[in-house]
Length: 149
Picture 1 (cartoon, rainbow, N blue to C red):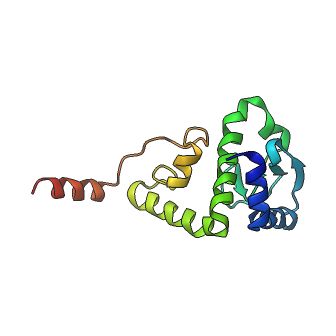
Picture 2 (spheres, rainbow, N blue to C red):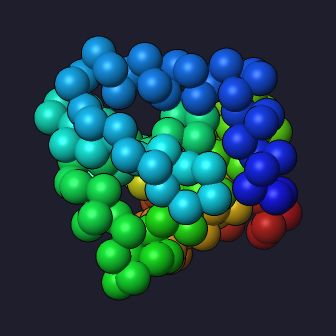
């Protein structure tokens, strides 16, 4: 998705507005990033535990905007920008769909990212997620039982 299209869609569907509201309510400073992305820096809350997360076209980070814009973190910025594109496509439905995908992944592997469709599409490695985690033992047993009959 083109950056301008993503920016317009997340503005129209309200998700960027919600990201800006979260940024304002949590006392972050907002800076412009590349391609219509906004970076809300110095987020101070413990949840979520990630170094950054995205709401609409707003990337909210515990660090500075400069930290996220450092070329060494280009993959992480790309990962979060892909989430912004997901917000553009899904709008507010992104939240329940994302949390269902988290639940599915946790059910299967103990990790909310490895089997999460949205994290996989954003690039697991780019987001610093492991690319593989074994299925939980009870799921493995279920598959073994189902294939032996």
